[in-house]
Image (cartoon, rainbow, N blue to C red; front, side, top):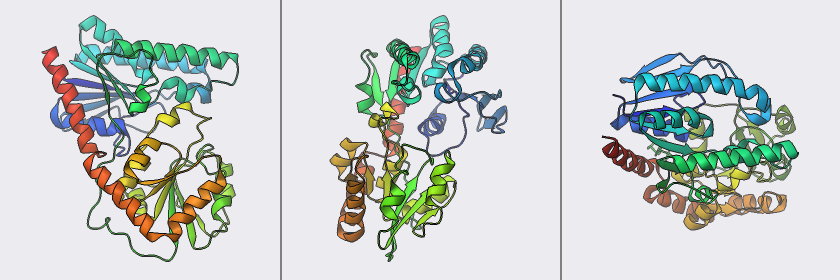
Length: 381
């Protein structure tokens, strides 16, 4: 019998930075697992992938991505079909525990839990309403936001274990189960002899990684950096809004590297003097509770970060500078401080690396996962 089924409404691919992928890789080290995902974007993922005896299966129907970008009514039929497919697979494989990633994979998992008296782990890395529904656009979205939020809270309460990406995210629940745990999106340690030493360089290099879209600081960063002496902004990520790419073209000290694989991004991070991660909290409410892989990879490489989120960790570890998203002058001042003060960069980077080794690495998160699943399997057996 399968120990664990991981359910996800996206492809279960080998993407090293995503927390659900790290969870899958960690759990398969110790337990028999199956992954059930949805190839909703038609990415050419095979229907069944065999991996060391652990199967990954995909619902291979191309569908829409979320409420906001495609509309609720178009989203529902695809989701219902996916839920039916998941439930059938669960009945076939009879896992002892279901690991349900996010709200849109919970319903068939919960039905299976009730009918077969199994255990259910609800792993929330996106509070669905906060992440995808524009709360203040009109009355329809306000009602939808409230409804989805209530449903998510009720499902969280009915799970056996609730996992969240941060302690701050847990505070957003009015009702939650007795057993809650935080599994942060900490990085694995990629520091090697090749990547652990930063070379002295004349130009101060600041790195932006992530999708090129509004709400990530790219509306103001080109204007801030373009006239700064001995400063270079390096950008990598998938282009989601062409206008942002057009705004940086022709600027000599801003370089767009394209959409790179994980190893190439790691190489850039290791050779950077600083990283920057900015989020418009008015666009997505949950960003104030999110601690992404950018922060932890910066800590891992000992590179200081400039950010307006994860303020608790940044203050606690002294691994970077906190700025106001809506204050370009403050952002410019932070960049200037790091550029002109190598000792400050070194201290922030060293403090971040030490905190990573002691508290904020994936090995620690992995052990938390094992504690959860060892306890649940004892109860299930």
